[in-house]
Length: 204
Image (cartoon, rainbow, N blue to C red; front, side, top):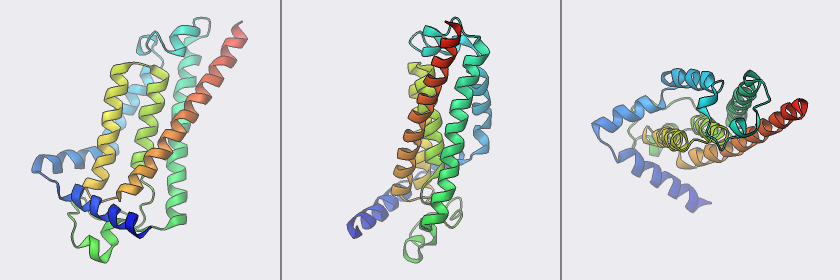
């Protein structure tokens, strides 16, 4: 365990000190939650548009007899529940584990570049990582468009990286958040498939 903790700290320092002025600006932007609200709104609208989905998606393949707004609502609510649950679990775990963020470590904090400040006191696990991965993976599974999958995953992983770059989280905080996000994303897709099957059964 001690080796893992030490590796976690050394990896964080390596990421935090691998810097450039443009990266400072980019990572600060990537970590701002509010700046991505328009993206979430666009996706929330797009799930009601048939052209959003690929021909391989459950929506396009099987829901011709289902009212389109119901299929879109199933997608929207599945992703929304997924993201709310990851965020809620993150707050519960953070207050239960009580692991301080790197900036509050007396020795480590003095060696770090805290561009955006140390953040709130506790940081395990990263809600940024959990929420963005959950959103990217859940929407990718539902929409099934390769371009969206690539763009959304790169976007989510950049946000995850930014959390260590800014010194807000240890790498293990972020990796745990990613794992949580993946778990809830696949759960959201299962819910979506279940709801869609129920809708299709009513049509048949």
